[in-house]
Amino acid sequence: MNRFTLWRRGVMAAFLVLFILQIAKVNIVAGSLTGSVALSYIRLLDPFAYLESLSASGDFTLHALWSVLPIVALYAVFGRAFCGWVCPMDYLFEVVERLRQRLLKVKGMVFRLPRLSGYILALLFLIITALIGAPVFTNYLSHLTNLYRAITAGYFYLLDLPLDLDIFVYSTGAIIILLVLELIAPRLWCKSLCPVGRTYGLFNKFSLLRLSALSGTCQQCDLCNKACYMGVNISGSTHGPSIRDTDCIMCGRCIESCREKGKTLKLTFKKETQ
Amino acid sequence: MNRREFLQRSLITLSSLSLFGCNLDVAKRDTEQHLQPLPNIIPTGYIRPPGAVEDRPFRAKCTGCGVCINVCHIMKYDAIAATGFSGGPLNFGLPYIKDMRDYPCALCMECPKHCPTGALMNVEKDKVSMGMALIDFGLCFGYNGDVCLSCSKACPLGAKVFDFYNGEWGNQPYINEACVGCGLCVKYCPLGGSAIKVVTKGQYKTIKEAYIGEFRRLMAMSQEERYNVVYGTNLPNIMSRGRIVEREYR
Image (cartoon, one colour):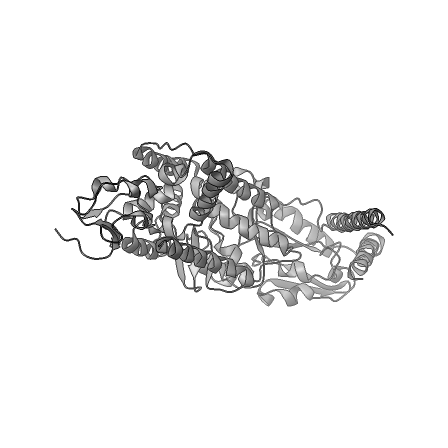
């Protein structure tokens, strides 16, 4: 029944394995989820990293634009699917969540900041970046950069190659801090703080893939709202043709939890009717 | 031998082994530090990967994504590392060439091709300006009665970079300003700890006068003066390093 979750884990693991294969010098993907090169030809760059790089340097180049365009095209199709299907933090957060439920047996504080605060934070990062002249979030705080940096530094250390060990310590520390944050406040990072997710959320407004609801079949049991860890009000918006919430990460947990299996809620590419 | 005894012995063996290993490591690091060529030039700044734009735009554009580091690893050169806290917060996480003595840049020019942000721009091999290699005249075999030429053979730009002043005191190589600072010569110098040091182009401008002055002084020396320099100070230095090299190889 958890077929979405299974597929999601599969895709996530596939991406992680592709990135880890570069240790064995298999050149399918090189780099990290912040910026990478696929098949040593297609340059890819995270949209928020692009915005930060742009605002820091104040220098618009076609070179960087060409690396961000494939990603923009990809997520114009899939919406904010990055957060649910690619970002490895999603899995790490779920492990932490399970640990909390099994071992500590406490519920985390479910609180969320207003959605606007996420945008304000992202804008703040862009402004600080422009003032300092270095990409503040992407280079220092980003979970994507830090996770892959920690992996890279880890295997450089194991293989006895040149590296600065403080990079490893810093990046691992940053990831651990995020995991502790998850232990205290579940998904606060994804919901309100992470500017990368905010940027991808904007794609939800016009993406081809979207969560659609068949009006009239929902029985307002609220199971989907409980299953959704991004806090999207799904049962409250089933009257419309599609739910274009910027918080939806296309994970499909609401569909799995729905009593009307596959009838009411769907992830679909089809054109909006009505 | 009962269990307690066995545990005790294995513990002692393990701890002594680990101690021994640590000592070896420390000893190796110590000799490495003593083996700096041109000890009075302390390198400032970082040697960025080939094709890096100027310092400020580089800091602004680089997002620390690690493409260059991993591409270099895939190409089996492993030259690039990410900067730690040593360079202050603004240099944190940016790529640089860390260890030229063992892992120099081979100028394969793959990283600028792959950089997604444009912090590294794709340029011709000979237009790269990573740094400037300086020869320690007191340590180089070519300046002290030998014909070595290892550096010029290793150089990917070859005759463009090297001038030779052949004379009685050896086949004296001089690296001119066409040098791009890849560091291959640093690795292939046969002297223990290398006789070549790479500094950034910015630092080279500040020490240029002194360095060229030293070279001119050496060239203008009379036979006896040069004899005293070579046999009095340089050769004992080189010989002591040679012994260290032998020990390392054994």
